[in-house]
Image 1 (cartoon, rainbow, N blue to C red):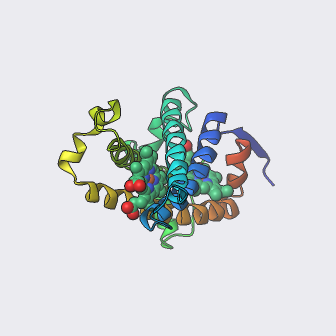
Image 2: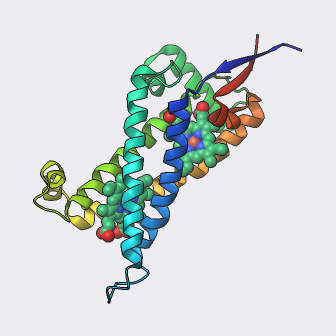
Length: 217
Ligand code: HEM
Ligand code: HEM
């Protein structure tokens, strides 16, 4: 039996931003669904339920945006597993080979799974697309938010977007992207679980502890 090597893969900022964003996204999805289908229409000053729900949405929105900004910064100063290059596996011949092999494994064409220490090539491409969705949520969300104060700094920065997309289009994009994120999350938890069983490298616990294990050969 070959010996196991223990590797420190996910540094603290990667883990903290992952879990902070998970909490923020769960809060944003729950409150967002209520914003789309309001519980009450606030006929009196005491009927402030939706006010609190919107307040929670906007608080989680700031946490989420800060989390993404910290992760983006870390992709320039962190280790090689968290570096921005890790999200573009198609730039190298080895990355393309690994992506093709992992894709074949996921689509049941091949039984062999190329073991990876950081994100596997298919996962990192999916994460890049998810980060783009995050950005889409932040831009559409803050643009909608800026409309409450047309003279404010935020509206001066983002108001031009409302000349390209109507308020309803922005809401539709914001709403649809939520379902794409939820679709990703379902697949993400399944894939992490699958890799945990197949690779036996402790991938699930690695997002808590930072460490993964690999056979030395
Ligand atoms: C993963 C992140 C997010 C999710 C899942 C999410 C979800 C939603 C959903 C489902 C709606 C209702 C849209 C509709 O059906 O009309 C909504 C509304 C809204 N969201 Fe988000 N959101 C997210 C991030 C953000 C961010 C970062 C902001 C920035 C401030 C934001 C600000 C808003 C605003 C201003 C509204 C409209 C509120 C209203 O008209 O009362 N959201 N969100
Ligand atoms: C709202 C729910 C979730 C979202 C949006 C999400 C999103 C992400 C993203 C964007 C990454 C890349 C991290 C980075 O490089 O900064 C990631 C990695 C990871 N997540 Fe999640 N995550 C969610 C929930 C979970 C849950 C519940 C688990 C399991 C307990 C989990 C386990 C992991 C693991 C193990 C990795 C590293 C996997 C790899 O190397 O490919 N995530 N997640």
